[in-house]
Image (tube, rainbow, N blue to C red; front, side, top):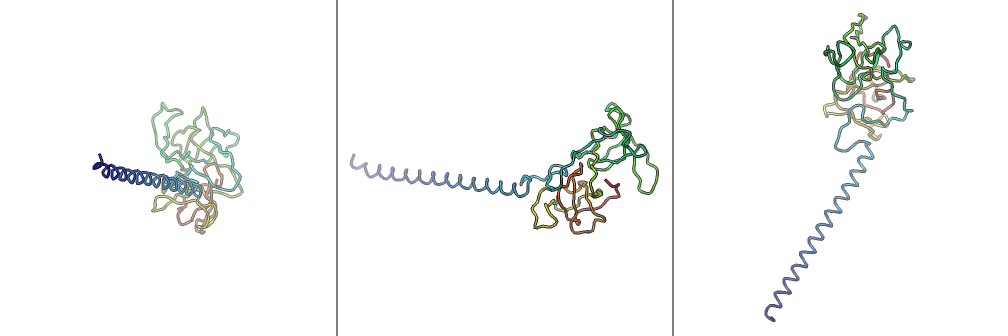
Length: 234
């Protein structure tokens, strides 16, 4: 028994060291994970978007102007139209919208339009709007089919006229900032290729105000990341 005592003490000592090492390792992992969690929360708080995601053009907002109510073509009556035709935006849902040959999904698809693009339309009849090609050279509009009235957003009128631009950035997205400059915090991100409303004419100033489809100010974007389209005023 005496001969085995030193071995038992050694084994006990080694076990104690192993427990200390395991406990210390677990504590280090826990502390590190908490620090990473806090850092992630700080990043999200500063940018107002998830650190590992890029928002589409209508998923975030950070403007400082009063929020305006978004209206769709379904809210418009014939009395509000101008010579029967109006302009709106195809609701931005990250894809394409079908233009049907008649009023209803039972009709075949005549064409398609990208979400976010502007469209000329008539006030709704039975929940569907007749839509038209729009020509900037004065050519009379041509009817191309029908779109559900709920898919057409009508931006609210504000003091500044708004136009449409397409976002172009080789990084895959562009930041929207709270103010006109990189020193201001990021309040949103817009994917390359998205359509967005902006105010200012032409697109050559350093920073321009950008808006949600409903007409609410989202923030500011560098004009070098916007390519102006020949669009109507909103």
